[in-house]
Image (cartoon, rainbow, N blue to C red):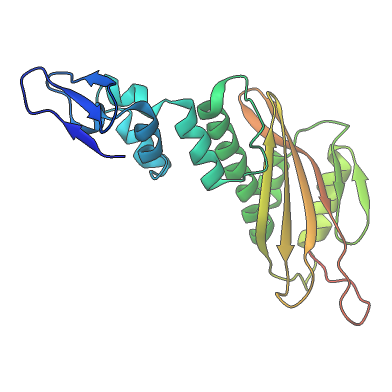
Amino acid sequence: MTVVLSGGGGGGVWENGGDMAVERQPGASMMEQLVPEITTHALSYLDYPSLCRLSMTNSLMRKAANDDNAWKALYHKDFTLEQDALNPPNGWKAYYAATRAIVTVNAEFFRIVRERLLQEMGQFWLNADYVKCFHATGESFSGYNAVMESWQLAFNWENVADFQIRDVRTRVLSNMAWVTMKAYVDIGAGPFNMTNVYEFHNGRWYMVHHHNSALLTNGGDQQHMQ
């Protein structure tokens, strides 16, 4: 489809071969003259910071940058296509922000694990009797105190393998979120399957459940990873 801009005063925009016209707004930019579908498609190429900056330029661009379809496209680009049929109650922009927050929190969990920071781990978990933790050893722990003792033991292991986190999938509800992922200790071996569950309390997310599958090496021994 070819779009022609009229050069006459108070002109319009016409589709070739059609008779529909969109009146040109005086002083508006070329971007602002585009029909909504084209604008949404153009915005789908922007990343998160760029889309936020665009929304601060003027009222028309703020309206375009807040379009739900633009944020849905960005969500699918940055996260996953699995939730295409989802209809977030507060819109895709809010859902994108919530998902981004959980992904950031989840990455912080693995930073704490890598650096073996017991105090930070204690602050990361919700202090409740229903929290649970399943380590790669196959052992499970229930309740805040037992879970913290398990992390103290885990951080004292001398032979802990390094790992890479991949295939992260996140689902967010109003006050609960869960993240599934795979942790690769050795690119030639199968991955650990992991699930982290978070709850939202007093303005922040806390971990309430961590489940790490056990991975056997070729010799039948377990590789240790928190």
